[in-house]
Amino acid sequence: MTDRPTGTAPTSRQGSAPFRRQRRGFSAALLGPAFVAAVAYVDPGNFATNVQAGTEYGPLLLWVVIAANLVAMLLQYLSAKLGLATGRSLPQLCRERYPGPVVYGLWAQAEVVVVMTDLAEVVGGAVALHILFGLPLPLGGLVIGTVSLLIMPMGAGGRRRFEVFMALALALLLGTFLGQALGTPGLWESAGRGLVPRAVPGTDSLVLAGGIVGATVMPHVVYLHSALTSGRRGAGPPGGGAERATASRGRLLWHTRVDVALAMGLAGAVNAALLLSAATLFHPGAPAAAGSLEAAHSAYAGLAGPLAAASFGLALLVSGLAGTSVGMYAGQVVMDGFLRRRIPLALRRTLTVVPALAVLASGISPTGALVLSQVALSFGIPFALFPLVLLTRDRSVMGPWVNRRATTLCAWTVSAVVLALNGALVVSLLTG
Image (cartoon, rainbow, N blue to C red):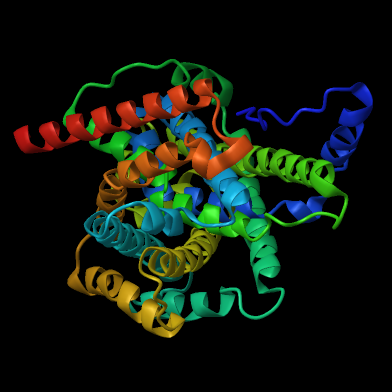
């Protein structure tokens, strides 16, 4: 991920100095969009898939979590760079460049992705309220849906406050599960075994691997990230001509790399710590912990104490609230970008929360619904990934910030692997 503008490098040592100064002038104010995206990578769906994977298979699927996180880094970087280079979001560019039927098809599947994402966030938050305060699941879902509206960025400065809130939520989640993982015996031995790529036999393990990929590589924030950075295209000091503009853009892109590396690295650490804490605490002595998030909460209480159980419930609640707010934000970007239409946030909240409330009221296992929702999300990844790669490799779109060949090759390889995983998952599910 070291793309830089081609054909714009100064020809003298003196000419390159402004670019170097801009690049080295670190500013925390230019960080933030990737932290919004990263929160979606530690949502309740991740809790369900990682706890189940660690409980049933120990650390053996840790390498899947790490690989999925590296894929997520690449995709979020490309999305952020696309918005920075063009000043438009991925859905907007798709609308401008693709025929109407393709655009409507992309919009329809993107809305399904948003609904499935929201299902995971609201269900997870409702489960957290149930295990912490005893609220009935449907009532908990209504509370999560209502409170999430208050978190959404509103008015001037709202986006920055939203970014700060998401960064704090990510820090809380990291502190919770990293502390639990570091406090369990045999952590480093388990991590060493889990980092070795290997196939785990059985359809259930493949479903879990697909769920991990779907829970880690989130299509809706690929759309969202490009919108979050599109408004920063003109950031930087005014004036100074083409050289100053190139230096300013270079500074923004460098900060984008730092933003993505920090935020996605933290999200990956949360997921790895969550899986390892389940692997070291629950496998194989507490198999019931894989059955549901409530069972995992009880297992934490029995094996690590009430404080660890309360921390797990609080982290799940924060994850659900933050994640569903990000999902609503992404839904607005998707509709506005593909269709040039907006609907009131309250209406969107109502439409997307209904499936989750139906699941909570039906008696279906919330954890099972979470895992299946993440598997469904994995099928939405190619529809965001293919346009993203096609656009970022197109010089007419990206100008000097077009992908290098190595970056494009890596992105196409990732696409092929995700498609192969989805195909294998479908075959396994159909054949039982």
